[in-house]
Length: 370
Image 1 (cartoon, rainbow, N blue to C red):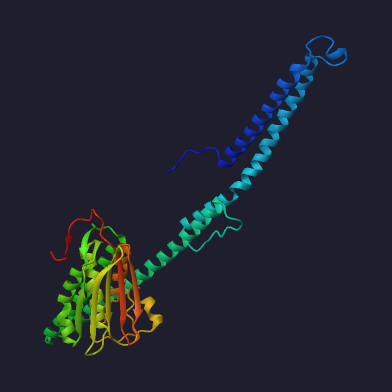
Image 2: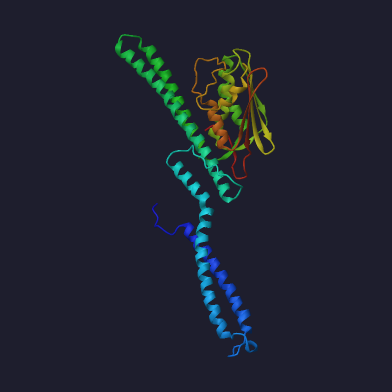
């Protein structure tokens, strides 16, 4: 929004400094006038007939006072201008850094030297903000590039299948239709995952009381057939764990964790253990599964979007979109909780989710089922 031009802060500070100096000087001269000249006799002979009288001293003192006030005015303006410039120099650097960041360059840092004061505290806070913004923008750029690539792949496959079918009208169209359906389902799942990830990142959802134990039972009920197909034992137990948040998002979080534990497991004879409960004023969800060993260096990357954990063995042929744990991390973060992934010594992962307990105004406990 355009603003009308006004006096600079440096000029205002300069005038303020000069005004303080002039007022101080005027008070001192008034004190001298009142407490010194009042005792000088006001007659033609002066004090004891040899000293100047009050009239003479007033004229001499008046000239000296006028010269002194002039000198104080010049010194106040000059010194105030220099002092204001030095005081505002850090603010000038911060303003220049803000303009640089506004032009799109987030790599610039102020790195103001010197001891801690208000300006250096502001500069450090600004540097921290720029660092977070740069990291967030880089993450969003990587996410957009990966999402574009992931969405382009099924579209390209669909186009290739359609081209084949058009060139060979007498071919086996049932197989083409089946492959097109599979590719289309993958694109739909990926799009829904991207929308859910964006929604959880924004955090604009209604909060209610949700029991993690009910969500765990619901997720286990849905994924039990898949676990049985792979010969995996799915065990869900624990007490109530009421937390505040979105039932839909929290159900997706629990489902993704259990599905990830089922998929990244042993080829046969594996187990998935889900435990719920409370820890202090937090709701706790623990998902533990058997499986191949997970390298410790791989664990921090598992929650990044489109990181499929290529060093982990997967027993199904669907490669997935690499958004399962990314959605989990985003949902946990949006609910103000914490997510901890620890490799088990014998293989597999132990995932612990801690979420703030439901507040008194969160409403009755609900399940995610509609």
